[in-house]
Image (cartoon, rainbow, N blue to C red):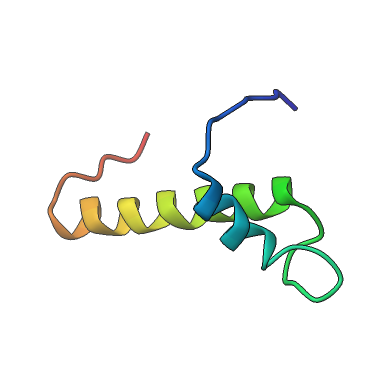
Length: 57
């Protein structure tokens, strides 16, 4: 799996960390970021489809 690096504001990282770990929904930061990317892309696909911009490849 390819690795990427990103710069994240401290406030966003702290919020993310609140959802990671034993008391959180995600096992680690990577899982949280991947889930967020998937959800965002799904939402964008839905918007494109509603606007007639979706093309199946």
